[in-house]
Image (cartoon, rainbow, N blue to C red):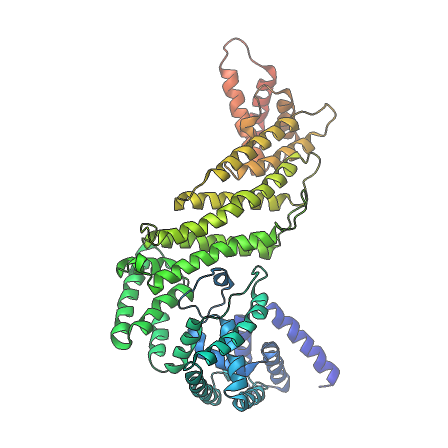
Length: 540
């Protein structure tokens, strides 16, 4: 095979693999390797190109091998950096990477180079994930673990050395957290508890930590229902007590902490807190971690809204243009916050006057931003969207999305018992603004394009629908323009959208009621509209 044909084949393989999810890529590789006949040179070449593609972005292989020592307990959760409080059991992947940079420089520099060179050589012919599980890699990982424990034993023995390594690891955090999130203004320093946790995991990797990791595998990230959640909570209580009897409190507590932070199964942890008779006011590690999650997610939400909506540098009247990724981020935080509200309530943390203030303060801080600054942006943009008579504003869909987000926040506040009047008043004011725009939209001349008028009304309806309000309630039955507009749309024929059909149905139903009120006098316009509607419905 010539060099040109090999380059062409490589390009085709790269293009194919780039389109496939990672799991299917590995399945493709397994299929290639599992062919019954003797592999041809071309098949071997395809296998090699797939391996090269998979390994291309994972070049720091020695670090990856080292951080695998913590894999069962690692998380990638930038929201927790917003908490501003200690979150017990939190072990971020970027912090494990920061520890690697310190240890590979100070504890085992030669071993780090040896590991990288050997793994690079092995990765020439095999996928890195398989390489890291191979016997030679396992031996290297154990040598790293032993050297790391020995080095950390010495550092943790003196305060000065401990402070130095924490400072070194903290310097890595801002650069790494920027890769995770653009919403974090200031990265908190690495805490002594995080370093001690990593040291503990390394020192007990083949003992208690292996037992905790094995137990953790039995807990899913979500439960099928309330009954399943209760079963898992019972199992968590039993597993934690078994670990406590065998290994002590610190090792045992890491299991529910990991179900919380690694699995994010807030419902199970909430029932665990209640069933294990933990006193919320005494500051247990699990309740402290759950509180930290709530504070972190709440602050992360407001930080994301501030950046995405440009609250600090926004020009009045400018469009809001959140990307699909930014919307997904905010919706994910809202969903997570709803789960945390349910967990805090189920755990009984809102019933105790010692634990409740932390939740109330976090929620109050977010409400000040959301109920005033974010709501003001939504009000301004909604007004402009409703007033856009000829064509929609460029961010009409984004405005509807933001209004839904705000009203979801209001529902959560009501469920949580923290409802304020701000968003209730905001809704009332916004609906009055929309109603006024409907009245203006219904004023048009004889030569105005009727389809354009209906499109305008439908756009206003999408805004009011967020709050369960249809514009049909604001259009008077005896409006001449209403009958003109509806008659035009019905005579035009063809299918109508669901929203438009609902509005027409409402107005026709109101017209029937009005016609039925008088025995001797009937409005010809309304009678014609009712007959037209009936004919349209009977037409296939």
